Length: 297
Image (cartoon, rainbow, N blue to C red; front, side, top):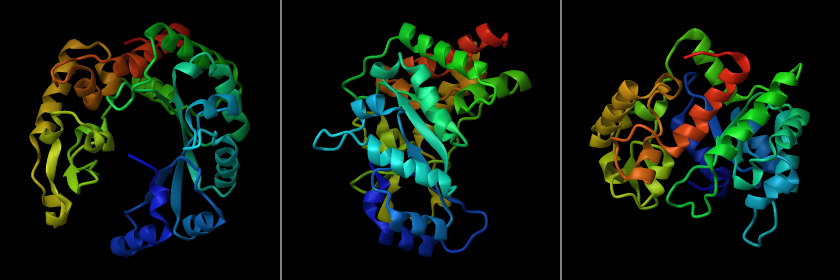
């Protein structure tokens, strides 16, 4: 959790040196875009590092939640840096977080990104993590957001590549199952500020959940190789939770039994088979697509 560019160019230069030249390894930084500069752009181009940039849409929407410590919005600098990163072909993905204040603005959000034309845009519906005390979403409003977004997307003769819509369509049309990487041991490792390594997404390492230690792998300074670390119990529990979802949920193949962190945040246990995140990110979107495009289970 946090903005990676605060570590500075020397940190990433050292990391690249340690990784060495390997054609099988690609590099990506997920950033809020506020610290990008000509020096950063030159470094990223030289080292072929891709960017995923977070932007929540037009200024009036973006600046309600993405502000500096002085409460001033970051839209102007993010917009400028996003445009440059796109022109340099450094940024191939934009992540847009939809919060309570932007659920009624699907059309404005779509048209803003249509002008920028990022290769891919991902819609992240705000999640109810324990660290988020301003969670104010409701199911009816979330579904209306997806309805509006799908409406403008369908009417567009040259539509944006919206990750979430295409994922549902791809799975539905090919009759396949989603395979979330959060359920695959070794795909994600996160490090806490104290140097503890967890086999899960970063929000686990930064949380205060009592069950987070089931994902604990060990201390960073005592790990010689990530390919040899033991599989923690949390991975087994997550797999069992996914199996339970496959038996009980009609929407299982669209998420693959993901949202493990959300199950722990909302219910403090693995055994549940549906969360608010399930509904907001998968169920309501799939239902909206089915209603508009006749996609069946």
